[in-house]
Length: 143
Figure 1 (tube, rainbow, N blue to C red):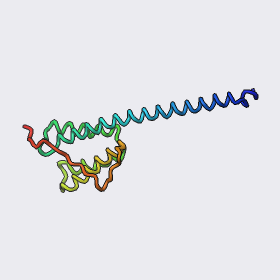
Figure 2: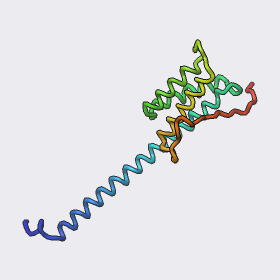
Figure 3: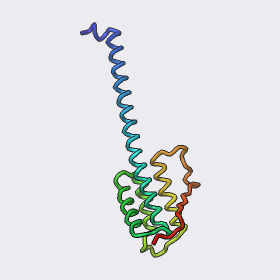
Figure 4: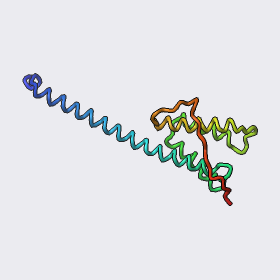
């Protein structure tokens, strides 16, 4: 037994096996991270699409329902920073807001989208103080 442990072949095999196991684990970790990121990207894109459905010119009952569902879906995978920004945005856009502010609405939307991009590790990373989300709509009212 002592001869086996002291042999260079044993250590070569052992080190090779450890390196192979470590490489395999790192590869699997990166694959899981990529899959997780892909799911979050789908979730965030669905949210932005739902957000488009509640713009002033395109608001509808269906749009509001899609937006509510999308907000609820974010709670499944989004990190706390995204959810916190979402809740602040929801406070600004809710119908019962006694002091609606266009500026606060824009600021909270900027923060929300910034946090989503940060979560997805968008490169190059954004400067939070300069980041601005401009939500476009068709300008045509739905009937």
